[in-house]
Every structure is written in C-alpha cells, then in structure tokens.
Length: 280
Length: 239
Image 1 (cartoon, rainbow over the protein chains, first blue to last red):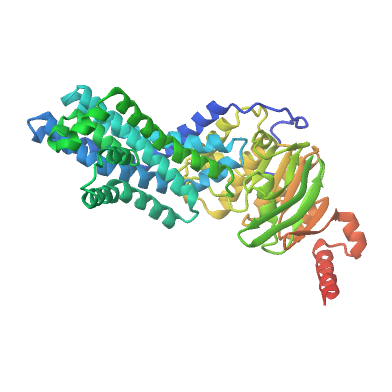
Image 2 (cartoon, rainbow over the protein chains, first blue to last red):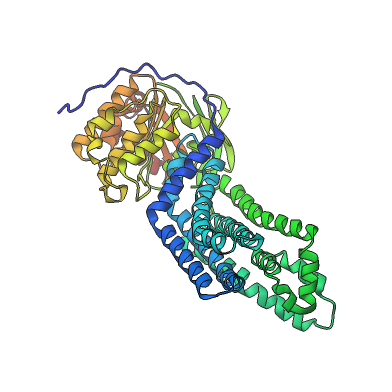
C-alpha cells in the first residue's frame, strides 16, 4: 500500500517575503507564449505564405517599385486580419494558461504584457522573415525599410486591438466578432466613409480634414507613409501634393509615427486596465 | 494569518457572497461546505486574487492582497477542474512552474513520486484523463511547500488509492503547522482531515466552528449527520 517514502524531511515552512522580479517574470511568460504559438504551426504557415507572396511579386515584376506596390496592397489587408484574428483566438485559447498563471505569485500586468510580448514577437518574426527578408534582398532602400517598419507597427497595433476585443467579452464568438468588425472597419469601411464624405462635401476645402481623418485609422497612416515613399502621391493630384507636403515633412512624419504608437499603446492600455479588475 | 473582512461579491445581478467576515490561522484545516452554488469556489478564488470583490478586503498576514502578487508565494492551490495548456507535456508543465517560482528553495516532490508522474512526463495534457489531471494538480499544489494550501474538491475524480495517498499527504502536512482550506462534498473525507467547519449558504456564512464543537452541539459523531441535522433545524426554523 505504501508505494512511496518521504524523500526528505523539510523544516517548518518559513515566510520570507521575496521581491517579485517583474521584468524577468514578464519575459519568462513571453517565452512560454512563444513556445505555445510555435507548437501551433499556424505562424509557420503564415510566414511561408508571406514569403511566397513577396517572392512572387518581386519575381513577376521587373520593376521592384511595382512589386512593392502590389506587396503593399496585400500587406494592408492581410497583416491586420491575421494580427487581430489570430491574437484574439489565441488569447481565448490561453484561458487555461492565464488561470494557471494567476494562481502563481505573478502580477496580472506581467501575465498580460507577457502574453502581448510573446504574441507580437511571434508574428513580427514571421513578418520579418516572410516580407522583410525578400524586401531587403530585392530593394534595400529607404522605402524598403519604410515598408518593413509600417508592417511591424501595423502588426503591433492590431494585436493591441485584439487584446482589447478579448477582455471586452467573455464569449469567444463575440470577441472574434468584435475583432473582425474592427478589421473590416479599418481596412474597408473607413475609406468608403471618407470617400463618401469627400463626394458629399466636394464644394468645400477638405484637405486639412482629410489629413486629420487619416490619423484616425492606422491602416491609412501606413498606406500614406508608403505611397509617399513610392512617389505614387504624384499621381493623386492636388490632395496627393498636399499629402506630400504634410506627411513628407519632418513634422508630419513624426506626427504620423506618434499616432501609430498611440494606436499601439492606447488599446493595450485600456485592455490592461480592464484585465487588472477582471474576474477569471 | 488570513482574514476576510466584510466582503461582498456579485456576478451581474447575482449576489454570490454577502458580508463575509472570517479569520483563518495556521494549524487549522478548514472544511468549507455548502450546497452547490453557495459561493465556495468564489470565496477561494477571491482569496487567490482571481476574483476581485466589490466590497471589503482580504488580508494575508495583515496586508491587503489587492494589487499584490507576492503573497501567492505562500499559497498552494489545487483547482476543482485542473485546466492546463492542451499542447503542453506534463514534464514541461512542471518545468515551467518551477522556472516561474524559482525563489522557492525547498521543493516537495513527494506526490510526484507517489503518483509516479515522471512516467507520464512525455504525455501532453490534452491526452490525460480527468483523474490523472487531478493527480497533476495535487502534485503541483504541494510542490512549492507553501504554508497555506487551498484544495477545491481534491478527491473528486481520484481513484481510492490515489485519494488515500492525497489524504495521507494532507495529514502529514497538517502536522507542520500549515493552514488548509478544503472544499468537498465527501463528508467522510472532511471528517478525517478537518479541524474546523465553515458552512456557506447562499453566499452567507451560516456557522464557523471547530469539528468537536459541532459534534458536541448536534450530538452526532458523523459530520454528514451533524450537517444534515443543522440543515433540518434551519428548515424547521424557517417554516
């Protein structure tokens, strides 16, 4: 019956107050999240997909500028979609992991930000290999690096939104619904609404308003930054010239970069605030 | 050592816990009993900081636990339904938790040996049966040699031999001046293990007294009978 023996006689437990090593613990959690995502194989498939798409665009087009244009259009649709949907689903599926972590001496913010870090590192590596490598290979200029930078920032922003969508709803189906809606709004609906507004008020000088509206959508910010690099703005008439004037300036560039950072930080901050008080 | 003061918790419109005031000390093994949905698990999760109460506070060694995580160094928790990352192997799970709680110098691997868990270290959590998961949960809870042990339905789903191993373990750890909080619906188990009994009904503490006092008051040796008697009295008083 007695299949075991006491291995060692431990003394009466003592209560020493250990400091919680915050950044270390967050990095450890991020590490385990990356392991978990890698086991999933989706990220590998995503990386190969991006690699195939970028290689074929650069090989099909003799002119790398055209290749970049086509690649840009794909990136602006696919990156937000994969970022927001994959992050949302993964976070819902990590419920057990979070529950286990919450019973340990770990701070909620470390658990949450560790999840975020793990997720962003995984998707950013996939993007860097899938798109970054071919772009540097075929076009190692400033615009190439702008494309890579925009892609990374967009990925971060949409993962932030995914984390917000997840803490807003306990129900997985609803959370994914919110995520898809955010994606649809940012990539398709928003431009449509802006265009309709431009037609409706075409008699008025709207240029400044349009510039302001671009800040309200991370996808538009990335698109404009890229189009300016590709000199495609010259084809867009008066508005294009105005964009060139504003976003091409040092002030415009730093403002749009700042807005991008806000698009990453604000949703994440709200999500963290909610998560801190959430019942698990 | 552990105090709950004037705590209220509601889920939406449902009042799950109302005005909970209680103090637990070292050396106690408290059986938390009550009908399904009486708030046992919610109380445990509040103590663990997983559920955030609207009202009141929870103190660990005199310090409020709200916004603090380090007090959980001193807690070992065995959940009612152990849910773990599906794709993780048993060995990896233990490895990960050891890594995250490195500060604990003395590990207690008795249950890992007793349940022969190293033999299933290569299996993924998804493939484990409910009972085996319970064994993993139990081994994890005791691993860090914590002075406060919270066991939520520990023996449910365990085979008789494994349940005995777990109860023996609790008995031995009790000798070492630890605090145990145990919920269960199996009265005979609680009778063996508990020193005190706390009875929850609809989120209220109906009583909290030592096992001997309860036995003396009701004139019943068996905990199950004693509880049944009290419930019957409650109904008579109500009608």
